[in-house]
Length: 292
Ligand code: HMN
Image 1 (cartoon, rainbow, N blue to C red):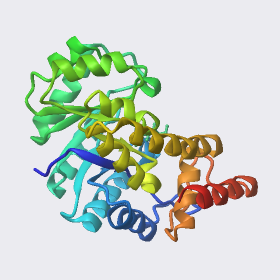
Image 2 (cartoon, rainbow, N blue to C red):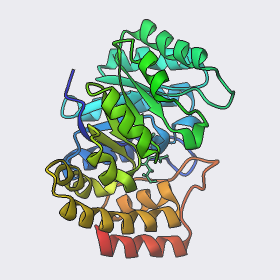
Image 3 (cartoon, rainbow, N blue to C red):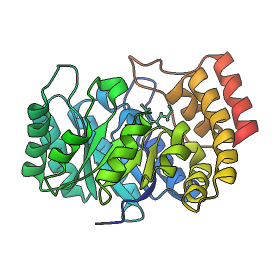
Image 4 (cartoon, rainbow, N blue to C red):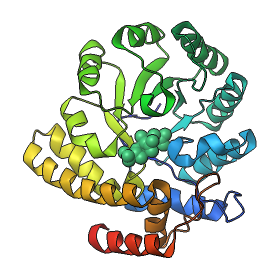
């Protein structure tokens, strides 16, 4: 298994206007991340990949294209979580056969699953695939909160190697770091990367790294070296960019910025708004001029 620490872009997917996958564009996004953003790895099939709006076959196609384009150049994590456990297992087997370095799965959502049900969800995917697993915890979208005691239960399974922590609860993050010094913890909010790094995360997984990966690495490495003032300055610039992105439509704007960089990032998938208005395109140009 590759080193799974460091900076991981949550991979965007390029779609054509009719919603089909634009393979050429997807390959260009992957190359941009490897060649220009110099990321350590890709998180494939996450929220940023518009994953929860796709069919099983489309998810597989994206896993296949990403592995084919990236090869062994960087680490690859496949997000296979779904409320359909059978689908999660099928995707997990597929990504494992392709040679992904780890699986990850969002906590099952929509229904109010009990913790034993959530635990069984992870145990089943691991048993069926034999792959390592990173829990994807994103309470603000799933409504699922996992505390220290529950993580301790999950981590009893040696195949559960870490957590992608997309939350702003820094008390919980500090408690997790202290309780589990040997598990991988990833920061999931790019705008809070500096405080998360100070608290000792092993890496970060972010959507904005597709266009801001170089600054993200600087924040991460400076903070690890204790150069907080320098890291803070770069986080400030980064957050000016992120504020602009969030105010203009998250994934559409990152795609717009990639298009400005010559990458065919394409459309978003409905029910998300497919593309930017002229006024939003103007904001993209301003963000590009200021931050890229
Ligand atoms: C994913 O699954 O793709 C991840 O959630 C990526 C990452 O955690 C992003 N979260 C979401 O988009 C929900 C963040 O990078 C986020 O986009 C960024 O911090 C802006 O808020």
